[in-house]
Amino acid sequence: MFSRYHSPSWVRLATATLLAALTACSRVMPIASPRDYVMDNSPNVIWVSRNDGPVMEVDAPGVLGDTLTGHVSGQPVRIPFSEITSATVRHGSSDKLVKYSVGVGAAIVATVLVTKVIHQPKFPNQTGQ
Image (cartoon, rainbow, N blue to C red; front, side, top):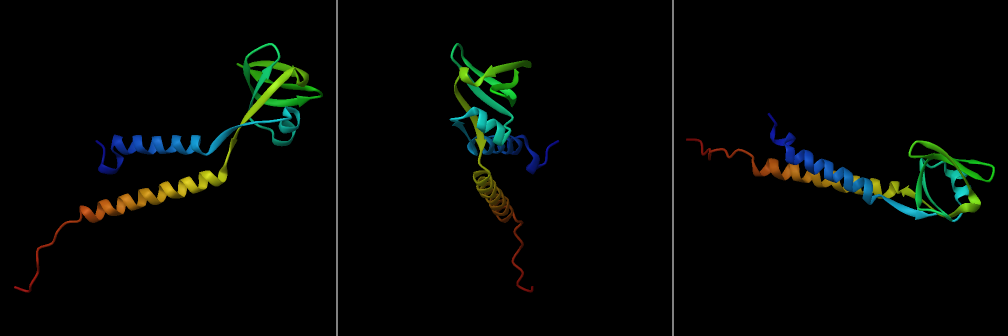
């Protein structure tokens, strides 16, 4: 059913590599001014803490005057910036992603080439007889 290069172990390796690339090439970063950050960068998600509760994941954040707008668990929310005690965002690093991808690609190519050389058929000695 699977060829040697499409075996489940290769699929698992590719999946693990992709997940490692996505997580290794981003970091959670605290932001000093949620209002300015949202206005300047338009992130998809921002995590905020309020004076009175736990951390909330705000999807599609926006700014309306002195209020952070967005959705928490699918419900629209409005949080005054004066009530936000901390805010963080996940920031991707394209430099790291490119370097990681090139390194993984080179390792895969090297593995395939070494595998081909090792499994190359042996020809009988041709001495002209």
